[in-house]
View 1: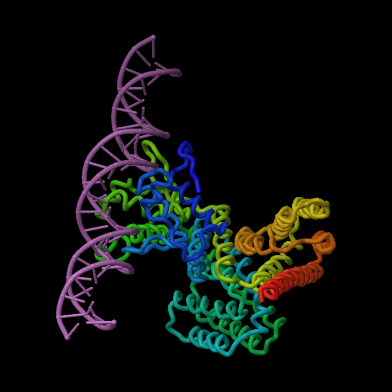
View 2 (view 1 turned 45 degrees about the vertical axis):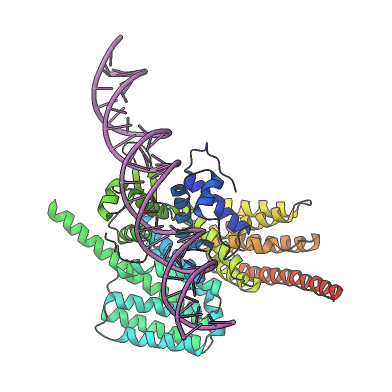
Length: 251
Length: 251
DNA sequence: ATACATTTTATTGTCTGACATTTAATCTGG
DNA sequence: CCAGATTAAATGTCAGACAATAAAATGTAT
């Protein structure tokens, strides 16, 4: 592990990269203790604050954890699915919010991915998963639910569908796609009529899963995607109309 | 933006969270300049090194960038697809290497996702994308190629297929799945015979894409997945045999 | 000898203050 | 008006200190 003191890059960034590379290469294994901050400072010939900045960078990526006290220190962290999941949701959410991704593109991606795991879900669905889906459908049918709560329930419903595939890697990859869509979905105001329609489509999905009927499930998802896009378009249009009216007034 | 000085959590972690939440909530917008480190230190009532550790955490997640000099400082970073992509690859790779994910599970996830975007790719394929796929197939057919180079070409080929869907969100989500598999794929030793088979299957895929024949493309991908798993299983078996032999000798 | 309380020690967390480096803005002389 | 020198503001880095924590070592009483 070496750094170049003459490089224009931050020393802490270089040190973080050196350690990260060592972890990726397997030179540092899970739960292994790194040298203490002072030792690292000596090794890289920098000050302790600089080493600490490097370690904080790695901690931000969940690559290490630190413990205080005697026999404490920084340890290589076993990256858990939940940690990776949380990071992916944050990243995906910001990515969508900062890059002017159209609703259509995001929606297409989400449903394409969801349909990818649908056949596996249909095959392997568990009673637990079915119960979750039914429970969320029931919740979505209750009046007085806020739009946010409705969307949250929607996410839970779809997560159950995805997790039903029984493939942790797949669940992890899809988590970002499904959850990152939520802020966009929250823009939609769900009328009683549209909620009714969505509940009906969700019921179709749950039925198809229960019947382990993959083609029917795929068809139901396609219908739901189409309906979601329809709703979003009407929202966009009403926004545009309002903007146009405003424009008209000021003119 | 506030922190709790009595919390047991690191101050730098709290500050990072406060700023991160502000970015996610949209209180800090892209390219907006954060207060200087000294000002942040005053605001949170901590020292400058503590603020710096917090900022490095955010920099590690590509949420901010820093610039030196007058009128420099920390700016909210527009998260680019490439940055998010790179992070996802790192995370996914470590996730697989640290969690004893079986080849079958990873492979299933990868091909399920890839098949998800296949219909879109078939519909929207560009001449450029087709050219890339053909070029990589040609490279894969050349003798003297190392296993690593063969795998790298494989990744490029599949990326072309994925990018062909013309959906950046989808490409981003799939990037991790495809690239993270590479270390696992690198374990396989490709015989001349198996390379030939893979090239043939890749040709089927390219032909299906060119013909914009989605069902044919899906079928080709299913065959490739089955063959990939077959190869991996033979590798695992030969490993087990060798281990058994070793065991026998020492006994 | 063992269980419990105390002390020691190693380590991270935080602070203070200073200097180095970089870069944009400002000033100054031609 | 322009080019170069100067200034100022910001991050990058360093050194040394102290606080907080938690494990290990030590002492002590039963």
